[in-house]
Image (cartoon, rainbow over all chains, first blue to last red; front, side, top):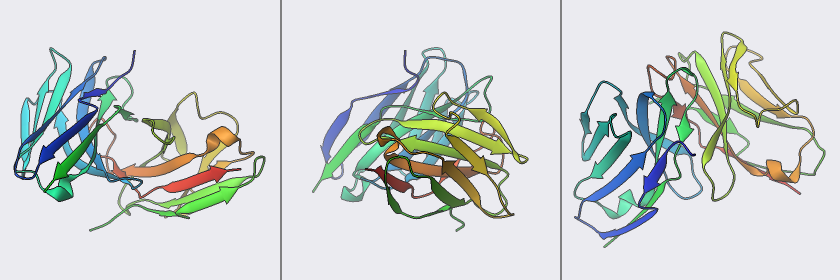
Length: 112
Length: 115
């Protein structure tokens, strides 16, 4: 089984719409982090949510975490063409404390 | 805003050659990591490093790989004898606290191509 699976794998929306991406994981975690990656580029940290938190906001981003379902969602509101990128969740599993396990990613395309 | 930097941005090498990938973590960070991403695949953890020693390493990080912090600013990944399957984007990351407590910040990556 794989830790960190995002769905959908690809999402295409129009500018101004909201984009929701989901992440599921297998093990108990300390925290879950969302990253963004433009094609062929580095990973940009977006937001971290701890295992004892249920929801967190940062600008147009809203992240939820449901540890009972082992799932998280990332909502981008009022999307812009510049939001076009791949989005990854990454978990820090309990008992490790020194590594992140990444999901497969959601490719978001925002069109004008 | 402080950033993790990596050099070179692209390295082409022949199979069997040694390569050293370099990283300068954010200056007040204490934990350092290497990850890799084979084209079209997930980002995979390789190794974490704290207090001048390896904290954790993955199955990928075999005897061909080594890491070093040769001075107060650089963090390097060495691959002794590269294989075709080592072709990937290699990311360095650093964090101020352990990853269970804080964010990891990634560099822009080094694209390694082994021919």
